[in-house]
Image (tube, rainbow, N blue to C red; front, side, top):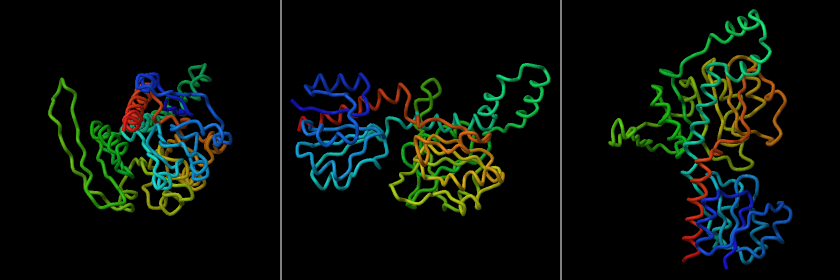
Length: 322
């Protein structure tokens, strides 16, 4: 019987698909340092971001045939090397897109109306005077409608972010490494229309996006050892008062330069779901009044986890049926 280790957990719906196909599933969490020995009896391993599957591990597992990533980014897997060794490497690029996109706007709305800070301060507002001080402080919020959103990266998550932005009446600009246009399909609610509408976006240069955007959202891969995409030079090109959200990978933004930009007022707000030293977060970020934080939960909704479990289980079953 084929045995698969889901080292970082699996949704019940995905597990049922595997069991019904006659695949034995183990969800016992095995520490990274013990995987070399523990995996020798498995034909496949499925991970999230907590477990890495590198060359040294692949080389000592002669029975390994498949590596799965429950999510989008595969920077914790040596994908090229695994495929050169004849292993199948699969992931779920679409399953969590909507969840990540909604978290992006959770941060944008939170920052635009100071909810991240007011939720910290309101519990202590026990008098009318204290209440009035906060009311005055947080009455300078802004609307997202009519503002320009710069999206760095035009994959499935970037496109999901764009759909929400268009629905809010925002102006959207994309930047991607290639020059090809971004084609965005948009299906309205069935009660409104069953027709699918397409939008075409000409990508702009990185510098043009930074100069024009009121809000910036990053959706790019970030291989280990890569320098930050947003650092001191890039902050210098942005509008004063820009808001930026990172749900991509820790290190995409230089946190040292971000803190400087925040303290200078160049960046009005920053929403962070991923961090350079994760799970340890810089004290200055944790305590900054203009930073909205979440603990790497971009794809962690009930709906996304079920979609991920089903999509990945289906791919695993299809592979071993061959």
